[in-house]
Length: 186
Image (tube, rainbow, N blue to C red):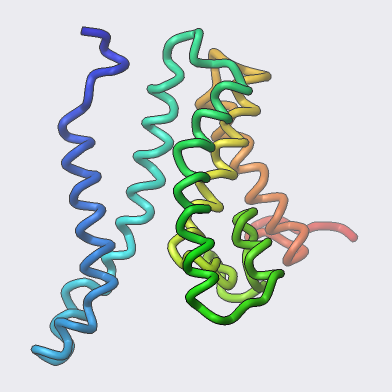
């Protein structure tokens, strides 16, 4: 059996645990209704499941590109986008229609996974499809990883990691004018 197409059971278990953490986090207030503070005390940190999903996604993307013929930028980006975008769009349209808050700018921003506002990071005003804030980051990661496939296909993991750190440091330096331990001369 090809080692790159083989499922890794421990990762599948971790995905399941992550999913449960996120679900319990979202439903913690229902548990609070039964026993005050119990849901909050048990599941307040359940949102870490999203972070675990992001890490697993990066790992899966790296493994999916182990074969040299899977390292072509265009096919990589198209395959990845088609795993996420069509289903999100199918859900965005009826949610927009049912919301009766028919602001075309919200629909357009949601279709392009752009934040609806400059609000509370990392959510930034969510999306018509509320969980799609995570998809925005996932799609950005796909583009970063795709760029690493263009310039450094054999070192794509390192290249993507360095590019992510550079973007974070650069955004912090531009946005706040400094980065902890760094002083930007203006």
